[in-house]
Image 1: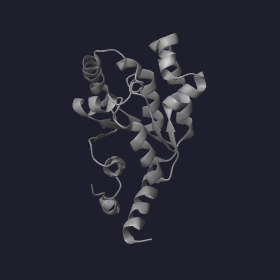
Image 2 (image 1 turned 180 degrees about the horizontal axis):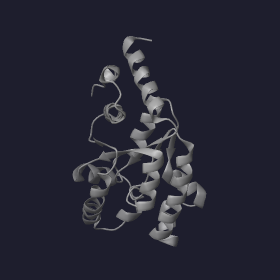
Image 3 (image 1 turned 90 degrees about the horizontal axis):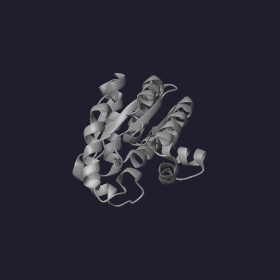
Image 4 (image 1 turned 135 degrees about the horizontal axis):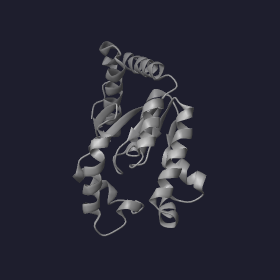
Length: 203
């Protein structure tokens, strides 16, 4: 193991020790990369990764799109709240949440109690470019996706800003964003800057 690998391992150990039983909870808009980046962050830190949406679908026995269509958004949010509350009992882990989870007062309170929230912040153009690639977003299923996305951003960003850590995501390699999250978490926990010197990722 070379010096950089040892430094990265030391950073991961320090972060996981500081985290204790809590979860690192990825929050942000659809298309921000919570699942993709969260999975890589979990691998970096050597802790489990959990996708709340996948767990909701498993618990309901149907897709999120079908839950919205058959039962409505309110029923989905109720199920989401219960599933996230259960998942937060299983830390440490990296937990990716749906775009509306952190906006729910009760869910946000659960996250604040049992987790450390990381907002993956993205601008409109980045999100729109990404969500166009998928047709499985229930809230963006109509023809006015640009207007809906802009409205959701205006409503949700003030709430997302309450997250413990904010990192701006953009079109760079995922490992760059992971490295920035690690540095931001180190700062959040007040861990020695010197310990993080080996955690630089180049684009």
